[in-house]
Image (tube, rainbow, N blue to C red):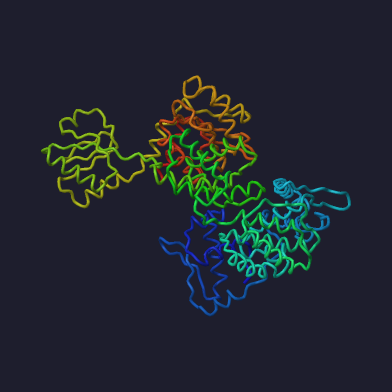
Length: 636
């Protein structure tokens, strides 16, 4: 079966093994739910003669219903030959990367444009991202008149770039023709798979599935490069364990048999580095003799204790986990080996506290060492720190519902009602217990809602009437009020203000913005003079762009005297590294309110999830901003 377009093929693939609702399908395909429904209709027409249909099940989403198992099985076994012509912009970029990395000769865009049925101008536009990708590996493209373009750089960089790309593509789609047809010699990955697995088992080297797949791809890349006359030279690795040396020696022999060429010592030494960098250690902490790793673990935990007042120094499990991970991480950063972290975006969003702590500690440590730890590696460390924080501290602040209890019965009845409420809803905080007469005298109610044993008038707050022995219905009504999210609306009210809100319509650079905002906060006593320098330093380490035009600049460490959020709306946009920020929240957070203020991050993640940036950007005053923000956070 041929699909009319690639999106239908992707939709068919998504729904093969799981049921998905319209909203999730729209998000994954970056289309509207209306388009999803139209695509499902088109798919069902194609499947009509193959014994299957996609049916919408309420509460579960679209699921595959097979009416004729025999015909559908025949459809699945008749896989068409994958098209080896890129159809989308990202596919063209990937194909261009592979062509440059595997070609021994110069390439002409005119030839590629003719082969892929696109214009030369289209490929010329794609080349900007191609060059940017190569720059990360110190590779460059040189253009020669009448000859075309050719890639130049070290052999190690070429192999690293190609292996990283293939590893990324293989994780996204194991049947990608670039991995199976274009970049590697036919059949080599399959021949390597069994030999590598046996080698690692023999030498008792444990790797993750991703680690073993990466090494298999690297060896397949090495086979192609060596076969085409591009061996490694002049590289020697530091001493590694006997098991790693033995595995590297056996794998070098396997590669030699596949290429039919004698391998240099440099090839075997580079294999040692790759294996050591991805090996999963099972050693006890006392058996690990890596001074750098031990020093970094102690430095991170002491820095967190000193700067953020979270004592994790006595967590033996965390110390062991960090030590085990950092030992192999040091090998990677020493030889500039990149280990992709596919969860990096989620880690930043779900562990903001641990992310800032770890990034600040690693950046501080980096001043005393020649190693540069990239944000992928920081992300792995953050997972360990985040788990350690969850073990010892309640870092997820929530504002619990405050209730006013109005009761005119005896003291024993009051205590019985209070105990019953707390047993049913332990998160409730009964702030006051007053009589009916005292309630009538109140001008206003500060609590979130009122529970009364008698019918009373409301004072702009919800009232639930409850008998001393409440019915299920009464408890259900209370439960509806208890489960309302009050944390995010309360955060908006407490930390956001009109005094710290501005709309910037004229062009402005990032540093001028920082200087202007920090100067006002300093005049008002929220921060001191060193705050600006720390904000600039934090931005220089890793961009504080959260995504979708929303940026969260802040200082390294907790330097504010009082917590505040300065909101900036920039309809024209402000350059933020390689991106453009339209909604900026400058965070000034104090030590005394840090744990509570962490819930602020959930606000920003909500804005991102709601795709609220365009609506926020168009607000002209604080009241308009607050209305849009409140709508977003109360929707969940």
